[in-house]
Image (cartoon, rainbow, N blue to C red; front, side):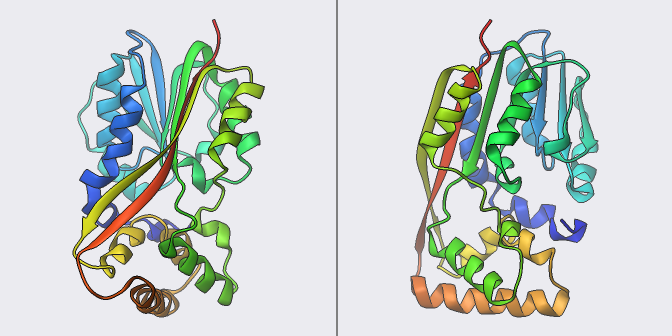
Length: 255
């Protein structure tokens, strides 16, 4: 993905709304005093620091493939936490870790059966795996973006369409030999001033995959058309209640 696609300021415009699934994931994790953890897709790093403090871990590593996001993260002063540039699907620890955490990041990687197999291999005995992925592919905000991408011959995988049904994740985790499996489909709703503001949300995440495939003029046309079609679909009157589905999953490697 093109580096310029990720804009930390745009992403953080909805920081309070984006952290709600993070809080729910965190509540499912048991502390691992003296242990190790990895945050795959750490972004600007503030939540990685909170993860580290909650776990009481000795070391937590944040991994992200965006240098613009990592510049923010690496400016944080957090003992025991470090950040590295890398692709989450290529992560390979020197030693198995006690917690693998991925908050709204795995959906950028295709082939989730292979990905979860790879991640499980890096999990220590008794270790915890937890992740959440958006499941809003059937909402107009996502359908219209994919439709426009198809019209322009773009790779729709750039819009992060790798998410499986919740029951498939539960089955996969079981087949990988994990236990204490808990997979939840949860709806997070929040009120926006208007339907047009849904675009401001998707610009921080979903649209980055398409922005990476276009030049400035091409993306400006894409975003403008997307905005018009979305308002036509959702209506121009405000406020607009944006119901956003996410899949939250946790499991443990048996002792």
